[in-house]
Length: 404
Image 1 (cartoon, rainbow, N blue to C red):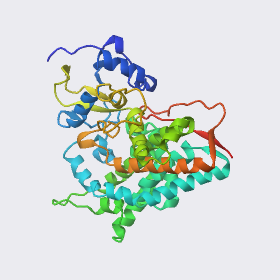
Image 2 (tube, helix red, strand yellow; image 1 turned 90 degrees about the vertical axis):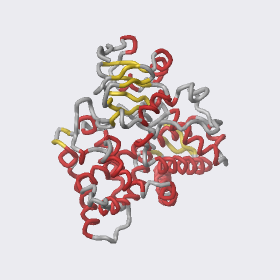
Image 3 (tube, helix red, strand yellow; image 1 turned 30 degrees about the vertical axis):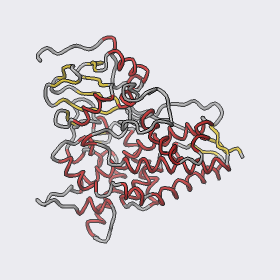
Image 4 (cartoon, rainbow, N blue to C red; image 1 turned 180 degrees about the vertical axis):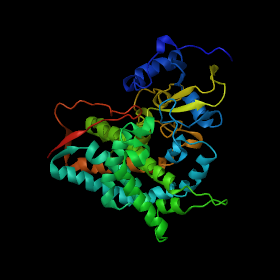
């Protein structure tokens, strides 16, 4: 392969334009007409379920380095999230974290999760109104992650405020903000809070939580994650929980606007679990991820050249009719459908998937219980608006009022 194809003019768009990158009707058309195409220079868009899955699984052919960064931006390993690392570092860190991110550990988190969900909902009911995104969905997933890490509960809300600011700053694409380069320079208060907890676990071996495991773990060769990278990975886990935030937001919006959905879920544990999975499929909270071709290759017969960036469109893959009959409909009667792509696939499958599913189930159960005795409705004149983030998909706000 020597001659590089040009941009496919008919399907051209700027991948940094959120309105275009999350235009699911456009993605459906591309999937039908040219499922692997070049919408911009040096960008290959992949839209079919099988092709997105294949790219995710092929970590040798497609690198995750720079997954969340703008093209050309490279940050040091210790400033990198887990999802943007390749072997050998990625599996070494993953082995440490996998001891905690298990189905059993997720179940152990249920009492805290349920208590936190109830308390936050009761606060909104007591106030008579509130924003279910800012006051509930943004806080709950991060609070569950922070509890798993070992942060005191009184710090959870502030931690998530800082992480939300980080996620919506220039740091994810560029590795820096106007304050300086790196997390410490850009977010000194967040850094100080995390570093204090790391130092406590270095000094005291009585701590028994995920953060302590990260601090103490040593490989056979004496390798350790290190305090700097541990801090980054803590930010990764807290900020990454904001993806679960938009899953929660999407579920809440459906509960508030679809009486049939509510009726179908009442007293049906199987359908509640299916509702979580179908939401993750149909309205994936992360619309797409990036990979980079390590060498010249092919994707479904289309040539791909070393160094080209692969835009793996999760939502487009999740709505592929070849994988899911009636894929453009939200359905609770899908029986053993293919595993959706909301958590990725292959070596970088999201470690927090069990925890995210638990949060979704508990939120639905507690909302159904609340709605039996209290009427919540969206504020008059509410207009659904997507969160202002390139890759995330879910409501920016959900202002509600209590009508008894």
